Image (cartoon, rainbow, N blue to C red; front, side, top):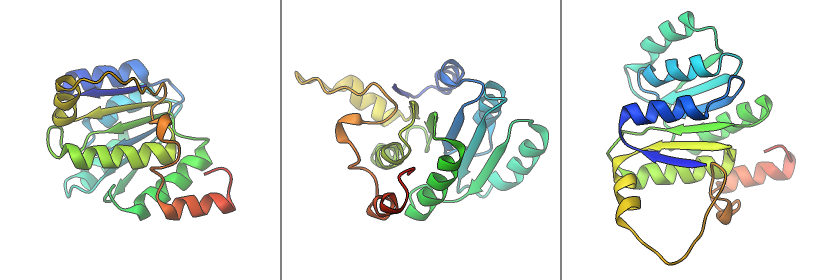
Length: 179
């Protein structure tokens, strides 16, 4: 399932609805960790990889990681870089796969960047569920119409297959069938 929302309260409620206690969650755009705390509460036996390039994030996450019992790993990095995706894909593979992909990159800004990040990350990690918080994408969805029905039942676009996986990661699949 792929959910697209804008309101932060709705976003956090959807997180509560889809996360199971032992899920592996990848959170792109965690900022200072307010939603990460909710994820940690919902997945007390799971693993969380939270990523953000904000300069405010590292200090806040030191405190969160010290306080939370759920294993949270924070990476201060740019989610648009292939190197970041490669690193996280390896970690997630070692954890048994990604259950939930959470994408909150600026809320209402840059729907094109948000969609590209979603497409590449979800194609690579193939999560069970994805939640995207972005006003522009939500506006587009509710303003569009089509007579064609193309639907994915998982948290990634199954109809696209592996098209979104960056070439360097596709190359790694030749060496490891787990990616």
